[in-house]
Amino acid sequence: AQTVTQSQPEMSVQEAETVTLSCTYDTSENNYYLFWYKQPPSRQMILVIRQEAYKQQNATENRFSVNFQKAAKSFSLKISDSQLGDTAMYFCAFMKWVQGAQKLVFGQGTRLTINP
Amino acid sequence: KAGVTQTPRYLIKTRGQQVTLSCSPISGHRSVSWYQQTPGQGLQFLFEYFSETQRNKGNFPGRFSGRQFSNSRSEMNVSTLELGDSALYLCASSLDPGGITEAFFGQGTRLTVV
Image (tube, rainbow over all chains, first blue to last red; front, side, top):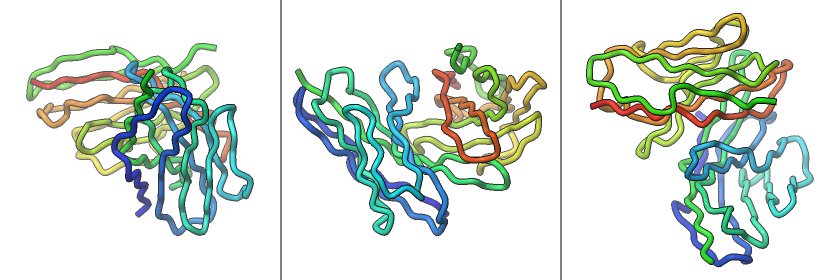
């Protein structure tokens, strides 16, 4: 079974600092997608960044970037110049194709607090 | 373009009752998935529908069921509610052109069973 592990239940940094959230996953599949989702107190799950497993280049979205190490099955998220609005739960998720349907498997989440 | 809409936002039910939650996907999206989020178990996959057919189901008891209508709107039903069913239920829609695409989530329905 596929599993996703986020080893940091909580993290806290000062505004404008850089923070890295860790994620490891376990799979025997070769074709899959990885995502980082952000869930603020409003509960809306918002996609932060995505990475296709077949792409070697790390994905980047403005202040958000990933370090994707396929062999190590590691997918960390780096947030640069952190802002107060980045305060949220962050979930790492693995997407696979099962029985003709896509299915997301989530990690337990990391609660990130950005302090002023 | 409107996002994924879930109704109601909050719900309080008593043990033994049943409940129906609704999800309207983004226009044009044909795949709808449901997830249960609890502090203890995290986010767990319930089931996924595409073109009114359930394609995939998670490891939940038969009390949890769902359906999808021809306009892609989906409902999930939980019968004989238990205290442990208290959770945030999230719905996600995706375009699903035959491959993996990103899922867009609604704001969820917070169900409290007392």
